[in-house]
Image (cartoon, rainbow, N blue to C red):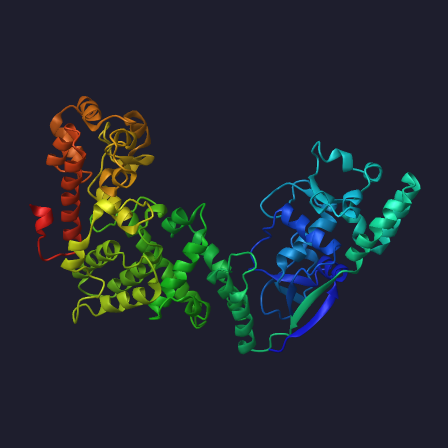
Length: 571
């Protein structure tokens, strides 16, 4: 595709946006600039500075390559696309907003706010080139806005509202009224050069020709992939949405059909709710790629074959739902993940989903589910998916299907187990940390004071030897925050325990639960063995850590199917 560089008038581009002729691809993220960034852009234009190049794509209004939408603030009913903004959305939307915010409904702010701001230029500060104070904005309806709410008030303060510089006609009308009312011709004459900079400002543009074939379409999609003006690249889902539009595949509608179908996909809805659902959109696409025997790399996802796409998407979503169900489950065969925050690795769900789909097609399901357990826990505790998961996940799915011929590479070796040091694991973002907490939940963890399953409560990540208690004992932060000293209990219980020594709150546990034996059972449910219970009663932290590590490592070895015992954890 050949590019055509040029320059275009800012006023013309704003007019084109307002008429619905200059539009955005629908998948483009929303306006995100704040008012300070808009003010800085206006200062650049008043000074006739370069503000970057706009990248535009000429389109056929009857056959646009991507679903079009108008600039935010412009009515969709005016949509009449002739060109799309590939790069420059934030700048054009900012300028349209600055010139027209006085017409916006009170509750219709842009970006992340519901408030409407109007923009002004203090002529005296502009003439003195005091730009930090020259361009400012005020929230409509507030006390600070009142001095500028009418033309007359602006005249008296020597302030020009941006709406007065929307075009030459507005500027001339405003300046004549200003001079008639104030007689301050000199100030206007000194400022007029800046006003004309706004009227005459030219923007550098590069225009791409219309998309004529799939090769052109792929070129434009690749251009989108490289654009990163706001520091956040476009999501894979958005790029694929753009590519599939021309094939009459509405990926956004497919996602909404999954996300909003709570009856068939309750777990996807639960895990994605209130979070960045791009994670779950992308993971379903990853599952789809794995089902099609492709590594789920970014480029592969963007270029997924359109053949049978709707059916494969739904099949992938069903498998993904099964994977999340198994993640969430505390029953036999489950993985004990409390919620989305406790998934050990983001890249782990898609291969789990693809493996579950392959198991559904096998005869010997019991053996396959047992193998799934071995693979899953090996992957968690080997930290295999802590980075670069695409190639590994593809290999793991293939290896799983060929397990009868050779054991998968992902399975943990005895040497890997020997090298594990749980005492050094203290970061809550660590997959190993999350895996240990999941093991405690699978063990049937109950609350320390009520004995009720923690699964029914609002939980907190609790220090078994309280953090403040250990700090007062001179224990350093890494050692006191180790996962060996952590488990989940009721938030209310955690607040009651506070900084008490274990020997003190164990007395409260015995009083609440009724006996020492019941306390031992509750602690065992958190993978705290009986000898570690006595270490807690004696406030012996070092011994407690050693004994709990031995218990947790025993659990890990069983989960990963280890064949040998380790002396360091059995002595």
